[in-house]
Image 1 (cartoon, one colour):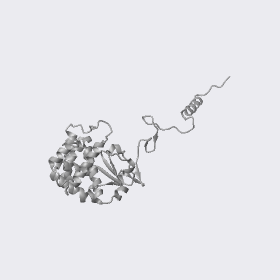
Image 2 (cartoon, one colour; image 1 turned 120 degrees about the vertical axis):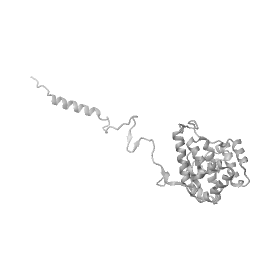
Image 3 (cartoon, helix red, strand yellow; image 1 turned 180 degrees about the vertical axis):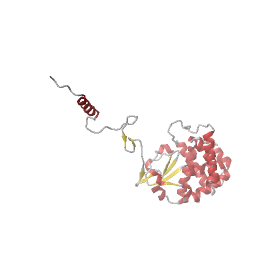
Image 4 (cartoon, one colour; image 1 turned 90 degrees about the horizontal axis):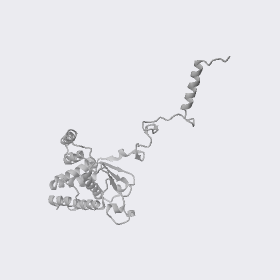
Amino acid sequence: MKTPIKPLALLLVFSLLSLSACQPKDGSTPSAKGKSGSRQTEGGVDSVGGGNGVNNRTFESFAVKVEHTTPFTNAILPLIKKMQDIHPRFASDMAHIALHRKWYILPVKLKTIPAELIGVNFADSKTQQLAVQSLNAVWIDEVLYKKMPSEKEQSRLLLHEIVMGIRLMQYKRPLDQCHSEIALKGLESDKKEYKKAIDQCAMKYLFSGTDITTDLHNGNPVQLTGEDYDNIRELVVTLSDESKTLSRLELEAWLKDRSFRSY
């Protein structure tokens, strides 16, 4: 007569079989899965992003207040004040790009923009990429910046980036447009009125029902044309060398003719 298998023994056998089925074939421990099914790694999801830097420092640590730099205070600020008398709204744009864009001066070699895209017909090997700009930030090659022969050349580079930033304003959202209208207050020694105006912009767009998240470039990459670069260089020369004779009507007509910036 066979001895019946006790229920406890059956339970033990079933448990061992279940444990074996849960182990990976290679003998490693099971991976944790996220909702998307991708493996979770310590600190975040696989290959999504993380901190970046150079010379053991984060990119953020290279941020500068460009309005506190010597080339700005000695050349750009006086120019903005001069433009305030000629075209206050344009001057406010200039102040806005200086105050509301993040400026980074860091020791990296920037990728050269192809010559045909910047409107010149000589070889890329003859050009130096001194700076690059996005909708929110300006990146300057610190090594080349320090090698520039004079403070005047450094201020001209800053002016170039400010003018380019004004050209890119057409892609910016309503909140940034509001900030550009009140930016001259940010250059005053007493910042109370500026802070108050910033809050008013926030109130205006948070509670007016205006869509402040509208993507003005419809999801397409923002890319300036060779003609844009030509116009930027022309305006930089005009502002730096001919501002004494520049009139509001002349500047307004130029901006309209080149579809550069409308107010």
